[in-house]
Amino acid sequence: MLVLALVLLCISNFENAQSSPTRSKRMVEGTEAFPGEFPYQVSIRNTFSHQHHCGGVIIHEKHVLTAAHCVDQFDPEDFEVMSGSINLKKPGPVNQVIAIHVAKNFQQPGKNDIAVLEVQDDFIFDDLTAPANLPAKNYVILEGSHAVMSGFGRTVAQGANSVLLRKAKTKISNLDLCRKMYPKNFFDDSMICTTNLGRQGICRGDSGGPLVVQGIVVGITSYTNYGCADTNYPLVFANVSQLIDFIDHSISKYKS
Image 1 (cartoon, rainbow, N blue to C red):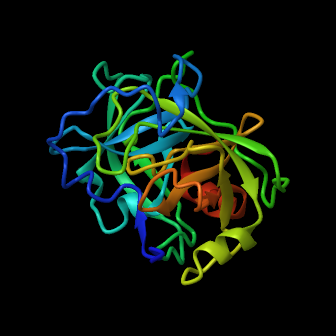
Image 2 (image 1 turned 30 degrees about the vertical axis):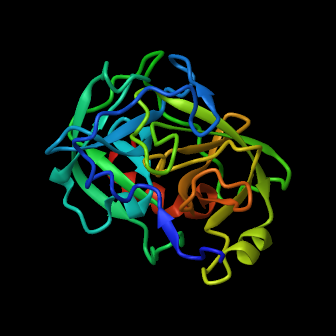
């Protein structure tokens, strides 16, 4: 029987906040990232446990992009952001979240699945911490383009989060593939559909992290099927270029 129910990737990280992350050689068959490779990647942590909850992407001195489903219906004081490190056991600076902006018309699973977090203190940019390059509005991502995703998520569906930042490859596909494989779900231009390459893929805890094409963060990790890196099911990301107006508005008071 095909499992059509989808599990958003960050679910149960709060439930398992006391679990000890285990070192693994893969982000579901991915590889270890090196320092400074993804300087915009952050770990969004639960304030009460200081455990990894979701990924995020630095876009401004005071702002982080993440998946809306990671933070919707939570309060800012529930989250803090750790930046500048690829090792959860050797954390970089930690910054308290002070505001959460969820995209208008966000709807689970996946529609407009983007949120902007405002942090208390400015990020200090250096080789290990830097803002991402974002696409222009309505930026066209060619079908068949190769992309890279990164995250601290689980390497198996029922495992613990990875201690080290991992990266994996995927390929841009047509939304019709996602419509076919997830027939009960809604799809529009606010989403990107990609194909698993081998058994490389995303899992719980990777939500909110980047999807990168030629150095541009074109997507934010949203969901896949429960199995994690199941070659029969595509991956779904929020399409950053379709939500640029919301992002710009969220950080507008800090723009000079």
